[in-house]
Structure formats: structure tokens, C-alpha cells
Image (cartoon, rainbow, N blue to C red; front, side, top):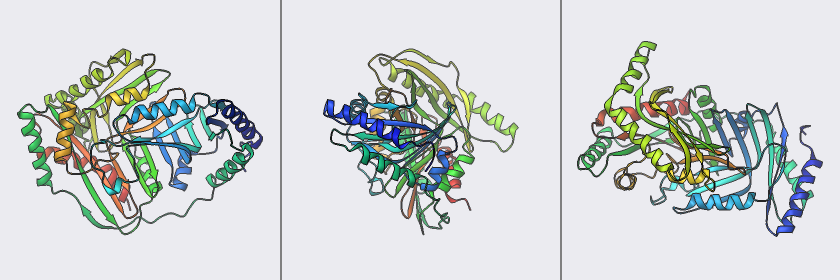
Length: 455
């Protein structure tokens, strides 16, 4: 047993939580944090290929959560408010031993009104888990949290024994590697048919029904065996550039990706986000790459699409924040296969407002839906032709202090037993060329396809 894990310390925390639960006659969350400098969150994920994995930058944070000590699954348009309410109630009298508070991890569907496809059945409208054991790595080092929900009738000693047994499983010998599967069949809408959908979008834009709409593509692979999500994540990690990585497991299914887009993060009441819209491919040489970036920054169509997103984010946060600041000019965000225009935005949450309030206000952004939002969503439901599930929706974490971070789940894939579903989209505005937009989705799909099917 790892020397950092102290059974007596766990028992004391669980006893305190049980006394508090008896006093209030409701469950209390308890968390104990241990310094574990040799425990690598990614190595644990690669071994278990379960739970929740997260690797974000600015600031650097890596998380791996295994087991579920508590979960919430809610449906409907008020799902974020309900998650906020239940999580806040659970954390109101938390027993916290050490420098880290309880941390909840999960995500939600892009559109609760879209009929659900069978391959997304394991992923609810909103689903969040409190991991039993949570490994983390940031600039302060590596830590391991034991997180439990303790009720009035809980047996603290039994909780300790169960937690130590799960800890032993956390450190289990790595499983054997899984061979890369072969593709039996690839199913995708033909290019000409998808480009016809872009033509339909341009027609709607021309007739003033829309100013922008985001159309995505869905590619399905039938495989002869299951993909190894740990190996896929390693390849994404090795070439992640400016992307944030995530993997969420529900049963035998895994939703994972390497997204460039942060929806919203909060640290001590300070919100940060960025507008991300406008895309060009990367160049084969430094000179070509620079020329493509300069062309992107100068293109009127791309600037127009980008400013729509900036304006929408600023407008969406109005009323929830103060001291809002958006950089006056976009910068280039360079990824392995594409580069984007990006405008950093910061603000301060007003008293009584939360990170999930901000996420509710912003999702879906014009970068993943369009403008006006209601018209764009209606167009997507009628024209796109598939269930996005959790693609292009918020995934992330929040803690008991109101801190958290949510990404927009782009450049992503859903892995099931013998299938893999890939997703990528692009924004259609006046002046868009259907063939160019199709090529943009091909470039966006390339990074994930290379990670999934590398030899």
C-alpha cells in the first residue's frame, strides 16, 4: 500500500462527516487529499481506460478520476441550473482535509430537443460524477483525493475499508495493450450531398433567416475489435499543440477529443474564455504557414465570422459579469492541422452568479451553432441529419468553491464496442464556398483520425 495513504486519517474524516450528516440529517461530502509525487494521472488513465481524463493548459491541469462516489443525471433545458443546485447543496457542509476541495466531472448533450441516437444512449442530457479516487497534476505538484458521500447511517470503518480496496485497484498492474483494430466499413455522407446542405444554409442566409449556421459531419467506422482509448489518448497527448484533451467513459462507451476551444473557466470568481472562429490549414513550411495565417487574419469573411462570435459572447455574459474585457484584435491559434482566429475574453462574476450560469448563457456559441441562435438550432435539427450527442457541447469540471473549467467538445470521437463515430463542423456565412467548407472538415477530422488509426 502506498505510504502516502493514511487509513487513520481517512477514518477520522469519515467519522467527522458522519457526525455532520447525523446533525443535518442529510448526506455530506468528505474529501481527503494526499501528496503523491510519483503518481502520474495519465499513466493511470492509460492503464484503466475508464472514468474521466482531462489535460488542459493555461493553466496546466491533468486529472484522472476513477469510480463514482456520487452522480447526477438530469434532463431538459434547465439541466445546468439543476446540476448547480444539487452540487451546491451537497457541498454546503463538506468536510475537507487538505488543500483540495471536492471536484465534480462530466458533460452534457449539445441539444436536448434533438432525438437521441442509440450510440449516444449511455450519455444523458447532463451527467456528472464525483470520482471515488481523483489524481491531479498542476504547477503545485501531484495529489490524490479520496472523495466519498457520507450519510447519517454510514459506517465510517466500512467506508475506509471499501476506499482502500478501490485504491488497491487503482494501482493494479497495467492491462495488456490492445491491438489496433481494422476498419470493416466507413460510412459518411457523400461530399456532394453534404455540400448541398451548405448550399441550403447559404440560401437561408441570403434570405435573412440566418447570419451564420454551423454544419457538422458524422463519420462512422465499423471495426473488427474495440479501440484502445489509452493508446489513442497517448497519441493525442504527444501531438496536442494548443489543444485541451478529454475522455469521458460511460459503461463500455468513451467520448474523447482534442479540442482547441474553451467555453468558460472560473478561478476565484475570474472568468476566462475566448472567441474561436475563422480557420485556415497549416502550411508545409514556415513561410507558407505564415502566409496562410496572414491571409486568415486579413480575410473579410473570416473576420466577419469571428466578430459574430466575439459579440455573442460579450452579449451572453452581460448581466452575469463585471469588468469584461475582450482583446481588440484576434490572434492566431495554431494546431497540428489547422489555425484559427482567437480573441481572449475575461470578466469577473457578479455575486450570486456561478460558472454554470455563464455556461448556460453561452452554450451553444455561434462557433458551434450559429446566429440567431434559435434559427440556427432549428436549421441544424432539420438539415444536419444526425444526433450530435455530446459533440460540440460543454464538458468539464467544477469544485466546491465555484471554480471550474468547461471545454467545447470539438475534434472528438465516440468509441463504442465495435464502432467509432467522428465529428467535425464549420461555420457557414455569406461568401462561404461549399467545396472549401468540406475541405475544412476534412482537415479538422485528420488529427483525430491519425490518433485513432495510427499503425
